Image (cartoon, rainbow, N blue to C red; front, side, top):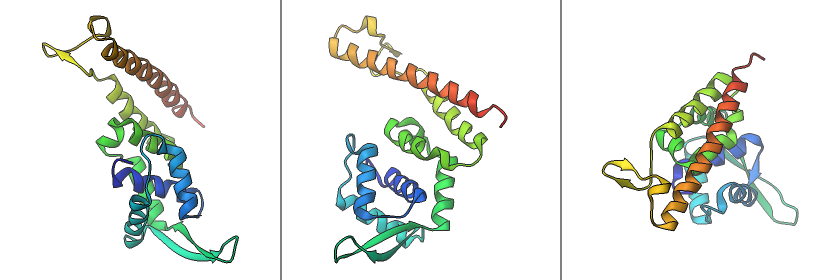
Length: 181
């Protein structure tokens, strides 16, 4: 993960689902973002220690499958409140960075109020709808058809297709969340 911010969010998110020991937590983190941003022990265990120091996570020992005892991590009530706060009020970087946004998305169901979920999704949609581009000429984004370099053109086309698919999904989900339950 790029920073302690999204790592601590994902730790809290997974522990909100159920208590886990460190290795199990690391496996879940790797499955979520490991292919993009691997999580090393040198990042994971200090992040857990920081969450413990803030009273957001607790650790206790349990018997392991073999003779060795293992440390099991549990989210606290304060940790759950912090997770909900961070999901309800994500930082701008959590909205604009796709990997960080996917970390938010992975746990957004933990927010009980559909209006809160929709508000977060609307922020991401607004970000995606703002004019952007990898390359600029005369102050304007370069369009794929005007980009002579095939690799840069590929970047533009892939980003456009991905953005379109995400925007369509966001609009549908926001509409679903606005349906009275």
